[in-house]
Length: 178
Image (cartoon, rainbow, N blue to C red; front, side, top):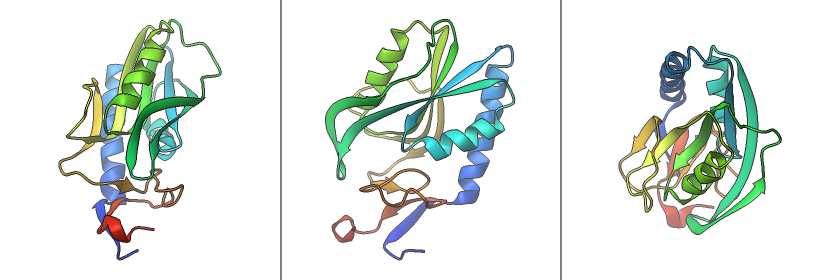
């Protein structure tokens, strides 16, 4: 383990929380014929895969890729790099995101998806920071971050590195980060 990285949530805590989120989602969507999971790439890919394996109702997986970060900070603009391949009109959609930070990215994606007339649209987010600039409704939250930190691991990166970590961590000293 890298001594410059503080473990915020270990692999066991993440696995347990994903199971409990999936249990709630399974209950909430018990009468659904098919649930469309929209995974926001790249950060939410590992979370979406682990969550999908715990959901016990028929699912379809779709992907979107967006860009909203420059180094450690939000750029305050959202670019859609990859859009959905299939229509979501009339379907139950669960948006899967890694982290709610400023709220800008989720708000933009939520508005785009809502305009495509899904039957329902809810969001599951692995992490939620406490200081959003824009209020966004998240129905399912994995963990709340009560202090300001730049997190990495479990799919989340810094300059495309650290996604492979099986835990969520933060740099102990941001100035010493790579």
